[in-house]
Length: 124
Image 1: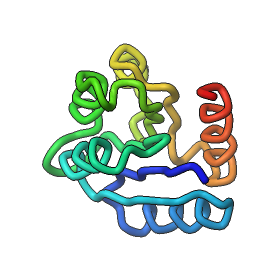
Image 2: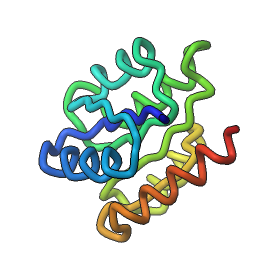
Image 3: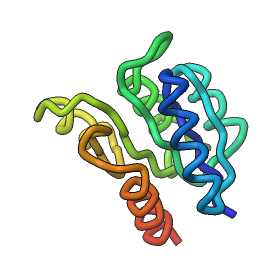
């Protein structure tokens, strides 16, 4: 069973994605800010991270940069799942090493599950 870490400060959204992934057979961990998410990425070794950008304590870009910097976490796939749809944000996410960039409003939870499956399959 793949382990997913959701780093999302909106509790309702986080719980909705967690419920969806749990129903699909994934183990789900949740963090409500970037610094907690970074620590959980190191400690819990998820198979993939879904990362929001606008969050308290450490934003998603800083968290992604830190994940890519550490030897033990740099190969963990990270998908940015955000409401920031500006071209420069997407470009920055890709430059920092995101494995995907999805705008929450444009994708259903089912589509996000499918994207996660694709990234995990490519990783094997």
